[in-house]
Image (tube, rainbow, N blue to C red):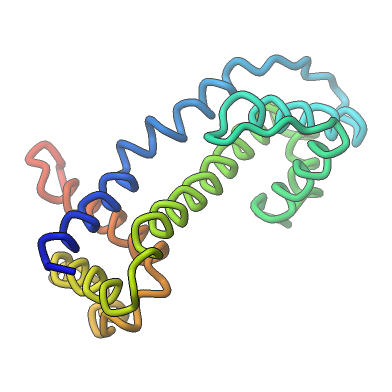
Length: 202
């Protein structure tokens, strides 16, 4: 593989994982579906109503807003809702499904708050899946030396802005962790753009 070919593949990976591209591809459809979801917020919130609403929400999002739509039964959607909250939800006192239920019960517009969190969590998961897919599709067909060359190109491009724990790695050390690394690179890119923005007060 030539350096030119490797550069083209790296450019395509970065294009497919660019922040603005991901917002349009993943975030906006999920945000739109979440906004369109209708439910009646009943007080007091019981475990039955809480699970019913969150399950219906997951079912709605998965069917209409994912890159690869999924049609879930209500029972499957309920299990998925519980898993999302167990893995991602936390308040000042505790975390998981129980913390979400408490917030939905006592907060003003509590169910709406929990659903907004779930939408963000689903979008984050979909972003991670897409990132792994992009790296696998573009890099996996190549042999180890070619993948190391791509990692080397990424390292050289971003070295001045990388944290020491990545900057000091060899390309071979980074090849198996490219999705996580590229996610870090985009975070760095976002920070650099904000820093260089003349309208940014900082």
